[in-house]
Image 1 (cartoon, one colour):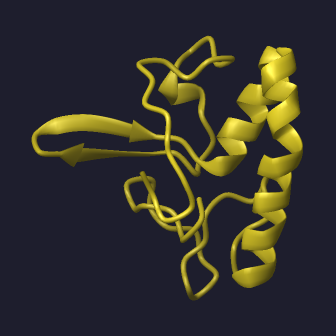
Image 2 (cartoon, rainbow, N blue to C red; image 1 turned 180 degrees about the horizontal axis):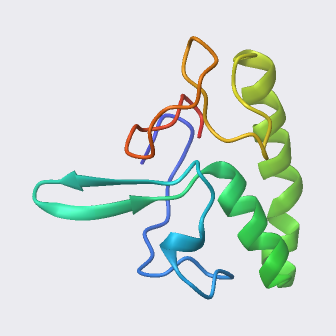
Length: 103
C-alpha cells in the first residue's frame, strides 16, 4: 500500500513483450531486502492499459490520466510523459538514479 493507494506486484509487465527492459526511462530497479525489484512508472502503467485494451483496463484509464495530470500540476517540474526524468537542475539523471516524485 502507498500514500495514494494499493500497488500491484507482477512478475512481468503486461503489454510489454520484452518485460521490464521495455519500460520507459521512468522505470527503476532497486534492491529491497536483497531482492531485485523492478518498478514501472505511472506512464508505463497507462501505456500498458492502452496496449492491453481489455474493458477493465480501459475503464481505469481516465482515473490514471487524471492522477497524472494532478501530479504534473502539483509538481510542475515533473517531466511530461515523453521527456524522461529530470533532476532539480533540469539535467537528465543517470539511468540508475530513481525518478522524481510521482513517477
